[in-house]
Length: 199
Image (cartoon, rainbow, N blue to C red; front, side, top):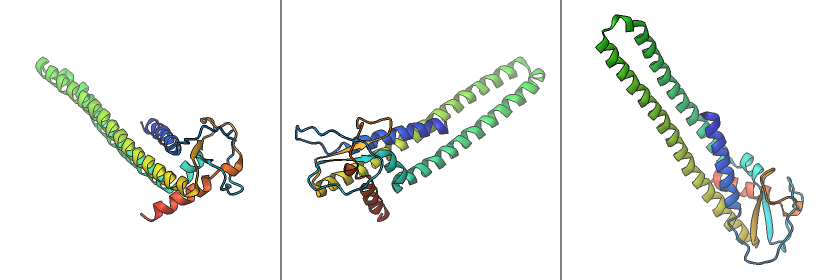
C-alpha cells in the first residue's frame, strides 16, 4: 500500500507541477525552439520571454514538497501498521475458531462463521476507507502545492517580464532541447523556499 500510494503521490505532484508551470500562457503566436538542460549557467536575458524550470530539481529541492513527502510517509506507515494489526487480530480469531470448531454445536459454528464473515467484510471496508481518506488528503495537499507554485510563478513571470514558464522533466517532457540560459530552476527554487520559510 505504501509504495503504491507514494507512486501515486509522486505522479500527482509531478502532474500538478507541470500544470502549474504552464500557468503563464503566451498570447503571442511566435514559436521558440526549446532546448534541454539540467543546470543553470548564465542569468536569463531580459529580452527572453520564455523560460523553463526543471521539475525534477524542483521536487527534490523545494522544502515544502520535502515536508509533504515526510508527512505522508509517516501517515502511510501508520495506516499500514494499523491495518496490519487489525488483520493479525482477525487471523488470530479465525485460528481460535478453527481450533474449537469441533467442540461447538452446528448453531454455534454457523453464528461464529457469520460473525467472522461480517468482521472480515468490516476489515476490508476499513482498509478501503483508510486508503481513500489518505488519497483524499493527498489530493488536497497537491492542490495546495499547485496553488503555491502557480501563484509564485505568476508573480515571478510578471516581475521578470516572461510570457511563458515551461517545465522540463527527464523522460516526461515536451521540451527535447533547451538552451541553458533559459533555465530559471535555481532562482525559482530559491524564491519558493524563501517564501515557504517565512510561514
